[in-house]
Length: 549
Figure 1 (cartoon, rainbow, N blue to C red):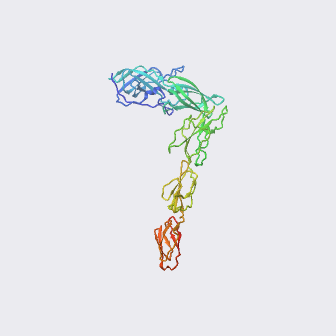
Figure 2 (cartoon, helix red, strand yellow):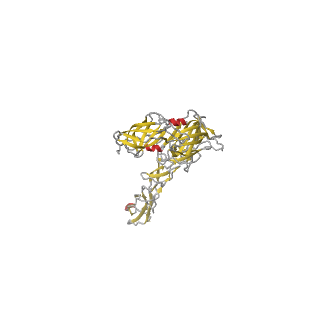
Figure 3 (tube, rainbow, N blue to C red):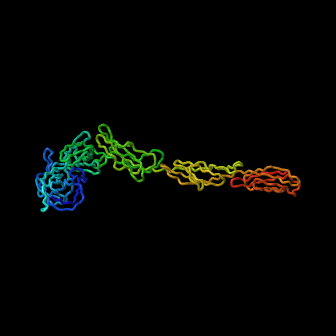
């Protein structure tokens, strides 16, 4: 037995503009494989029946048309086969032939798949399904391979439709219940466990409440059915778990609800933090369309006097420019009132709607109202005021101690910080020790709700303290010989001077000195000597007296 290599040919099936990959068990055979070297064979397969579906109580079949093409897949080796087989003639039986390339072995099972070119053009009739919605498969075993003649012989093919045929009867749920004639019918969803969309579109020649629809294999899939009624209203029904097996016939009644929509809320603008809750959006609205005109349904009641209820969900932006993940419909946090927030930030708002007897629910909005911004407020600031301090040195503490320079500033938000001259910023009130001029800077460091406020400054002057001066002893007696009197002076440290005319006064620094009577002074022994300690950077000048005797 010889093995022939193959190229791979993969196909994608389209139905009403949506991918059906994974919708049918038969399409599993169309998965692409790695390409291999190709050799060609002539393959002829005889079909003994139509593309038949026999589970309707009556056989639903359609005749072959000359030129119908069939794809070939090696189900044994799980490889696609390059090339197609074509119907040599039309009718209930025909022979398919064509040149194919692949990996073939005697005993392999080949799967033959036929998909009508007009599959998407369903008209809702049984005849239309039979003639336009063919999707049929036959499995045939390879009986013989002739490597010299390059031919392959198989058993006879018996094609079976690989789809369900569903007869839908449509009714109008809105009281009173009655038949619902529709001009267009849609079914769509996403395949479970994937992001592959599924969709069907049926457009009958005239409005009707009875439709035959061909649907490939589905299992446990949520399908949203929508319809455009002859009355101009749109209708919808969400069916949570739908299964249609290949080759079976189903009857389903869809009691359709009118399709309500949610008119998205509009973001509020120019919001600024003001310590109070603020509405983020205007109210969303429930509406429907009638002949392409919007009709608001906010107050529309069903027979139980229930309205449709719109709910809102808010998430705050965490990473700048990144939309938070959408909430689930069951997540805690949904509210039926217009959402408010107090703190500054960027918010996203989603909506959903709980319907009533007449209207189907509307799920979580696919996109939120983006970037509802509450801006930070700019705080007002009351500047600090000078405490008008005076240097606080004393004779017991001549160097003085630090004093707070200002009365505190205040702000409506954020945190006040201070610094003195070129010092470091701090929340502590600034202080100084020595007399002189200080520049006190202050600013506001903002927070999540308040902006920063740039630095400003005031000037604070610390006055000099009153100086002091004392002498000991305060007086002395000098004899005729002008004996020397030794004195000790205590003062704030300024330069010492005196006003003596009749004594020699000599200061030794600022703590001691001598006084000697001048011989030319005559008999004036009791002169009062004023001793002055000059002002310093922290002290004013001060004087004390010595009385001669």
